[in-house]
Length: 71
Image 1 (cartoon, helix red, strand yellow):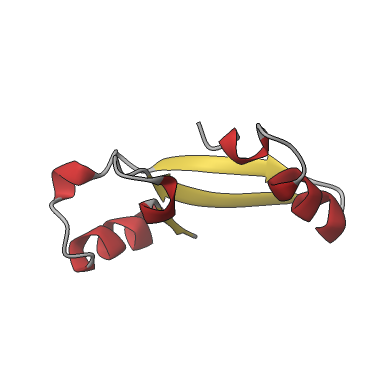
Image 2 (image 1 turned 45 degrees about the vertical axis):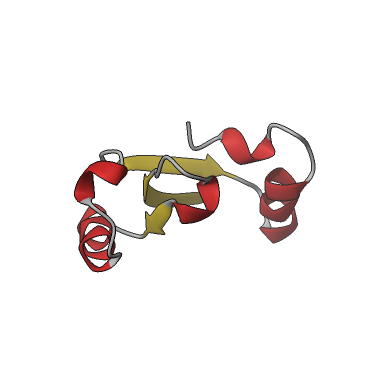
């Protein structure tokens, strides 16, 4: 299976990155965030391939580099 989404990164901390199902939704979220547009990167598409829900959760949580597939 494959999870696809769009992300616009923010300079302060990964918790402030905007992730949405579509690029348009990312742009809308940036506009309503209250932060200047230049605080965010251009949205990019991320695709994560996994075999089942547990595999996806394990990829997210199991090791130090797991959260860096978005780069």
